[in-house]
Length: 352
Image (cartoon, rainbow, N blue to C red; front, side, top):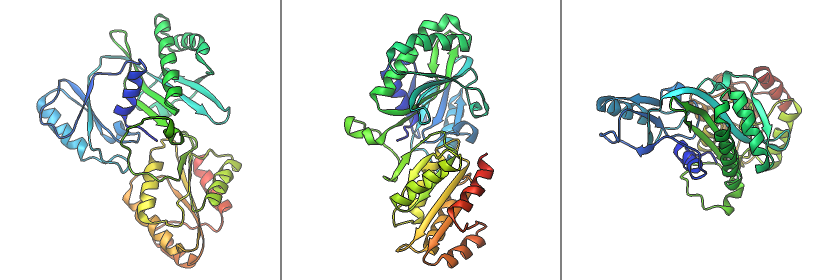
């Protein structure tokens, strides 16, 4: 479950991590304070590059920014509300996150001394495994050395402890602070935040976050996975994920759309997939039966046309009315692959 920014920051604040002063607004004509930063509240990344974050220094700029952002879809999501935050005086932008690393089966703290909107272009992220609070002091010290702010060692040790506490107590799979802002006054503040919670742990919590419509059979495997998967039937979905691993690629998700591959279910699925910043290919593996192959093809075409900036689709459909499906996909400039292996070979060319 991907939280909105203001929801993520509320959890960070409860854990003791500093966040900017902010209030939620909709179509308010009067700014709560000035100057401020207005941020679209949608459950996907890329808001800055999409123009969904704006600075307003006057009432007229505020009114125009609210109007622009409220009507601006980001990866298929249009906001219901905006977050208005104080404008910070930024000295440096850093990157800090904590996540479950599938390959090592450990919780890891991840850092880079260059945060912000271009963080995806960075290489050589620093990693530290964390098993309990006894690891906090040495990780905080290492972060202070890595960021080259030794005078903030104690503060970073506190932040690591608070981040780990928030992660464990909320059954998170990812908490990302990007940027972690060092202000000109010397404070460290979570300028932006992303939190993914483990939906399977919801029974242990009193979560009251309003989430967009989702598919109950959608499971996040790796938020940094580069291949998204869509299949019908749990067995075929698991086999598709395993096949992606076997081809040396990291799957981002497991998704069983069941027997009803409609345009609506695929639009929901594609919107969920669009939330993964690193996905470069979507592998669709369908065996048509009760839902015919041509119906699936029509749903794929309709759904993909409704969402801009989707990664390329690699489609394998077998079963009833496959010939008709192939003709429809060809007319819409999609390729239908003969088998899953051919699909994955083609996908790997864009992933690697």
